[in-house]
Length: 260
Ligand SMILES: NC(=O)c1ccc[n+]([C@@H]2O[C@H](COP(=O)([O-])OP(=O)(O)OC[C@H]3O[C@@H](n4cnc5c(N)ncnc54)[C@H](O)[C@@H]3O)[C@@H](O)[C@H]2O)c1
Image (cartoon, rainbow, N blue to C red; front, side, top):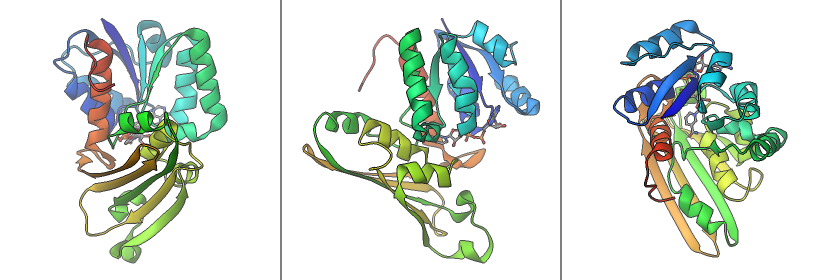
């Protein structure tokens, strides 16, 4: 039985608890959010609700700690979880643009024999990129189109299509901390946050988050396009990102792993 603790009780966690309602071999034992009413809401969705609502209790009772909160929560909770010898899953992967934090996570995981899982999030094809990275990669580029409001653009400025950002993944996750996590996932699987290219476009004509990923290297060329519907409770977060967390959790507990 995998005992799970989740930090952050927002859109992703709501999808996780709904998606795991019938899952065997695991139990959500602990929840924590800085807003207790959010914890209470998520807890209320569970048939067998947890009894632990603080981080210290979570660390004691759980084998896997899932961060689905914010970039800051990665340092605040994932480092102590790893130090306590727990496995971890990170959704706010943009936090790993901080090399010092990433190195610390790697070092502690190795020392404590822990594993850190980073789901594919709002895109797919990370397996192909990882394979391609075994040889030379010349280019990784992601072009993201989102409705202006989800990028913090309001009023008259929101009425037209506009390129808001063009640069490296490292800069992109600083500029849009709650929006462009996938660029860091691509970076970690491929050529790093300084060489991974990101374009962010506000597009008032769309009702979904569109990601186009282009990869070129010794293997040839890959081109992928995702038209992601938003999560019901957070338009910034694609529903696919939440689903990827559910499937990553199930992969840990199920005996056969497909497409690794
Ligand atoms: N990897 C991906 O592809 C991907 C895709 C979408 C979202 N995300 C990221 O996943 C995270 C969660 O997304 P969401 O849509 O569920 O967000 P959300 O805003 O709906 O919910 C986040 C919850 O976490 C809580 N929280 C934030 N920081 C906290 C802290 N330091 N301590 C305790 N509670 C804290 C908030 O109160 C909130 O209830 C975000 O950082 C988001 O950027 C990643």
